Image 1: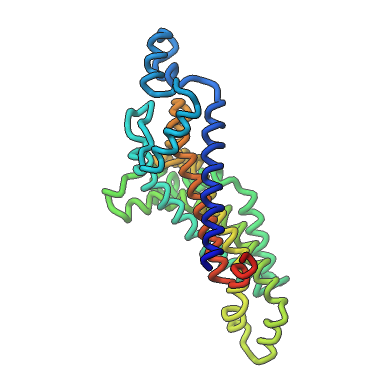
Image 2: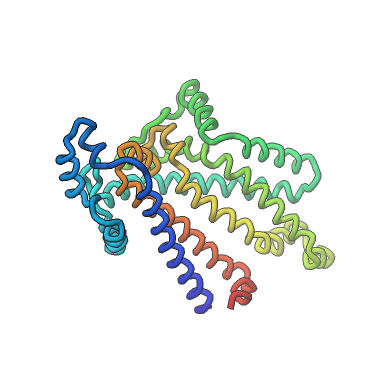
Length: 316
């Protein structure tokens, strides 16, 4: 296990280093000047140069990259160009909304997808299976921002059960906070649950065809007992893989939905920072999202070894 963990840790570190280089280089080649945008089009070249020197964006790229990486290692993400506020404070403030939103969406996705996928697999080629697959196909085809608008029209405009947008803050109460995030979470979950339901159905059907499942049934184990005792654990590896990727996508893919519901989350911060040419905020936010994706994949690898010891043994 120690060798398996060591290899995965080395891969994680190498991936993060590579991601930091790519993020820095991509933002370096973008056109525009943050100092010019902050000063305005009528600012004198001397004033723009002075602000660039103050912000540190006139230094050589290698020096700026090293300062950025070394700062991240000690928790110093620098100051926002547009807000003159530590980037760490801006990011942590927005994460208190984005992370609960992603967790809510992932919870809804998991419940709906596992229930629908197992139900469809247990009724293979029957009406229930056809119905679930038809609904999942519709769910995959629906853009989440369009579904979000439909939810606003139904539950906010017509029924008036939920607010059409905004976030009251956790100070107003946990219940009010989760109520404000429910519609965005559902709009994010509908596509993900449709995809995961199809993956779950395929994985369960594949395991149901294995010899040991037929042997268990021949020994008199009930269909439900076979499903819960023998099938689900062995079918979970591809399902967990997709779940890990989906959770990472939910963390990184909330920009559109947060703008539809006017939520002050991390996605909206990235959108505003791109508009303001606040590259230090964009760089740190993108790197944070990349880190979350890599860490989630690392956790998925660890779960592989827990669920199926053969994965660990084959890697040693």
